[in-house]
Image (cartoon, rainbow, N blue to C red):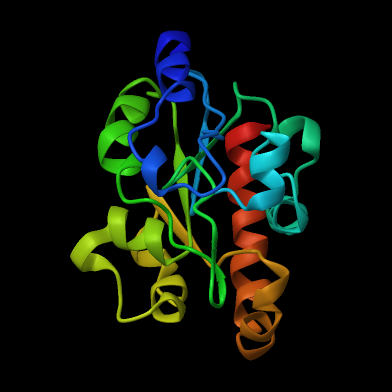
Amino acid sequence: MKKLLQQISSCNICSAYLPHGVNPVLQAGSKAKLLIIGQAPGKKVHESGIPWDDASGNQLRKWLGIDKETFYNSDQVALIPMGFCYPGKGTSGDLPPRPECAPHWHNLLLKSMKQVQLTLLIGQYAQNHYLGKNAKENLTATVHAYSEYLPQYLPLPHPSPRNRFWLYKNPWFEAELVPMLQEQVRKIIF
């Protein structure tokens, strides 16, 4: 795993498309039991080099019911984005994750993490990649059908503060899915 993480940290396959430069941000360990696959680091995470080191990460940890110490323990939790580097700003938020990372690196990482018991798929990019034709017509429908993907996968919306309206429109998520998620995480990690 150590050698693989070193290879990823020096990856530059999409450097020509990254306006802020290459800085792969992830966390992985061969003993990880919970795998979180997100989109791509934002600007703040790109600058700190720490995955989920922002308001979205704070919200995600609340949903999981775990503290930072547990979250950043690579023997417990792996944090792998679809695109490892900050893709830059678009017209309505960050650009999509670069498409090169997941096909190039994910299978190698997954082969090195044989103890993963649950994979959280955060956002449409991760859900479409991992669920393929089993993903529903949109993120809301996919997340609402979460029980169809268990015990391997659990689709989630992005925990960004920008998604407050989605949470307001979908109260079942925090009433039903979040408590179930916290129970699953407790069983896996503690």
